[in-house]
Length: 265
Image (cartoon, rainbow, N blue to C red; front, side, top):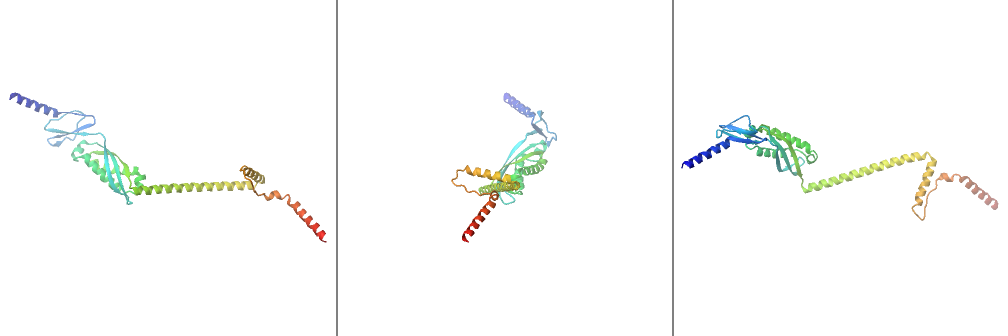
């Protein structure tokens, strides 16, 4: 009986001593309650003594927590139904508030992030949700950080991860993108035609003032036509080339007429 009682006393003593001695890691802090009242100064890291059962300790990690926000059904301002999920990065900066002010800060932060995600993104249009995601992330971070500040939590970042669009909306956006690409292609083609016509007009204006240049260009065109192996080539002659022969031709015609008149008389 004595050995049993002695063993029980030793067990209780070891148990109490194990609760008195606490080793906190570098990223941990201990919130101590003494007879139910919280010690305003957190303890740690290192070796921390707690006079159990008069004092109890709650361990809090100061490392950044990565919280995955599950997909949320959101109706945008332009009445498009989408599913959006996000990720929240936060850490405890005041261990005492994180224990005293909120029952479960992890669950509370998760619920707050979900409701804020639905509220903020529901006020944005689909194009804004897809193209201005950085601005929406900043707005989400500001709102969630402001709401969690009384809990001793600092939200450093909120990022929208994925936007899941309905199939019909994806097809409509694909058609819109294709139409936009066709429009740009037609505009580029029209601009090219306009520049080419302007260049041709300048070249024609420049060549019209120099007859030699016109003749050289004409001969170059004939050379290019001859290389195409056509059996018959029809090309016009510039009237300027025939001016030298016109006076002689008219004189010859007039002589033929005079001879014919003499024969008739």
